[in-house]
Length: 275
Image 1 (cartoon, rainbow, N blue to C red):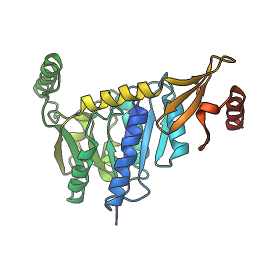
Image 2 (cartoon, rainbow, N blue to C red):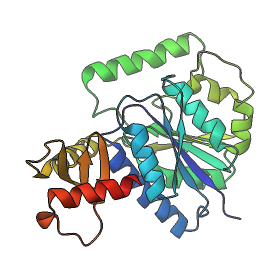
Image 3 (spheres, rainbow, N blue to C red):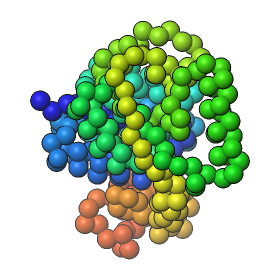
């Protein structure tokens, strides 16, 4: 029987990266399902950690456009580890296995193939491990190495060059739920669970993400403005042109000719969408 996979993604002020992140995750989940590795009931769970930008609104929009995406909204900013744990403890009620990853997708989504293969072989915890830190700055590389040395000296069992990109089975998460830590450090807690675990190496892709964000910024530049109301502009988005007005976005119906839309036409689209 095919397993149900949930991908848990903590989000804090991720307005810039969510369009690219969601696009890649849609492609990856479709690929995994097509290969028969997961069921159609698999989902991506986005956890809004008290973001101050449009992150939550974008999560809601993604859910409306594609049921693949689901969302959890925390009442305030609780920090990355608490947001991640909230997502994991929500997903465990629906999934056979859960992959956690950051919203910036610097961690290679293709490593999930290796995760699922190790899960199939019986691993309950699969940690994604960076193959190298050559792309890091000297300062980042040095401080990271120092961090792991200090953790080891303090007796903390951590996986070298591993952050929070990992797969956990349902029973591994059930064991994690028994810990009552207040100041969470999941990288130090997960190795204590005790079930079978292994690692999958991958290379981090920083430049590709930065390039995608740059393209996204360029695409979000106004392509139409209106003298009647400067707050109303037409922009080009990932899913086609849309109207940006008073902090909200309104999809322009398919087939509409953007260059011929009048201010009155846009008002009607906005009014119709609000109903």
